[in-house]
Amino acid sequence: MDVAVLGATGDVGRQVVTRLVDSRVLPTSSRLQLVGRPDGSSGRAVHGLRADLMDAYDEHAPLLDVALRPQDVVADIVVMAAGRTNPARPGATHDRSALAEANLPVFRAYAEALAEHGSGHEVVVVVTNPVELAVAVLAETLGRHRVIGMGAWLDTLRFRREVAVQLGVRRHRVGGFVAGQHGEDVVPLWSSVRISGLDVDERRRAVARLRGGRTLATFPDEIAEAKARLAALAEHDIGAAFALLDTWPADLQTVARPWMTHQSGAKTPAGTAAATADLVATILDGRDIVVAGQVALAGEVAVGGHPVHGVLGVPVVLGSEGWTRVLLDELAPDEDVRLTGVVERIAAGVDPYLRASEVRPTTAPPVAAQGATESEAAPDAEPAPAAEVVEPDPDAARWVARIDTDHRTGAIAALAAVFATRGVNVDSLRTDDTDDGAEAGTVVVAFRADERRCRVLVRSLGRLAVVRAVEVRAAAV
Image (cartoon, rainbow, N blue to C red; front, side):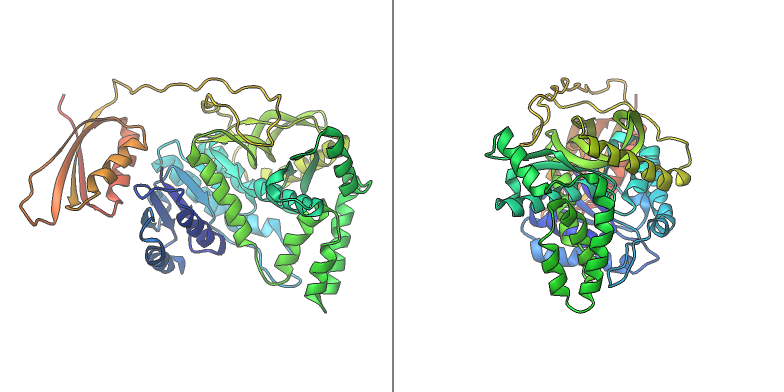
């Protein structure tokens, strides 16, 4: 599978591409597309980033490609990290409406380009803020099950870490999720917390001790007070501000620590990239895993006694074709009340920007037969239905591609990978004879595909480093 990172030279985009290459989740036959824009500094920097990555990871790097226009994006997984970000400096405020106005054209441009030129099967992982607006715009155009925002997963990982630190264990031993809106409107789901090695009663006592008798009813006021105290202290001693933060409850730390990081003048690209790479690796893995993410709901969840029709961060099952199911257990009363308010605030911030009154509902993609796989998944969760087997379409048009390639080891494997990763069967393949010492050869491939998929294949082949030219024609009947 191929991955494209939109905004590859930004703070987060650069970390994402570096992490994907360094972790070797993409084989050398896959392509990692670095996407910038021709009218900005990224149009130049993206070429330099490609060269730098090749220098650092040549032995195991995937094929590295550069694209500068939305219509040139070709990938199975698209990471949306393009657009403006909030400033990181003391006293800076996070204005969601200003970000929405600035980034809405970016969301729409890529959504429309993927809808027109894409394969129709791309899965989009949204990083850019406001993540809820981006998910709504992309889901409206591409289909809601193909789009997930990483904000709730990042918030979940932060929450698990804060809980783990206060318990004196490592994060992988703590389960639990954060729902709601990315940022200060998160909803820590204490009712979902699981701690490896503790039985039910022990876990309840541990959670009660961590919460200290508090409920989420006072959470907004606690956040406001925490920000005021940290800002005042940070003016004189930033270290003391972080030390004070370490004494607070885990859920409050989940919100206050990243806010304080921005106030310090730093940003959070490493944590954001780690959470994003987690979701990309999950999609690449092919198994269904329980994560948290912002998704466009169509009544799968009810809060405050009413089904939710709109974007919300919730635990979901994520696989190679997008998200399939919501796994949200019965909420505690304070969680339900807070989440109800968050739903209303998200709608108020998103609905004015949408072209349609609601996100277009789509059929969920097939669910893999294995079901959800995650150490903290609910043991009594319903098993996933069996996967649908998609057979090749015998009525699809037949095409013949003539591909001029560099005459070097690995060229045929790179070509074959493009067809295989897109589920296209090759009817025949032959190579033309080349003279000894020739630097180029020709590969002729006959295959069947609909016209849209044929266009995607041509664009994908043409962007391979070993390919010099591609010519495709309809085969004679």
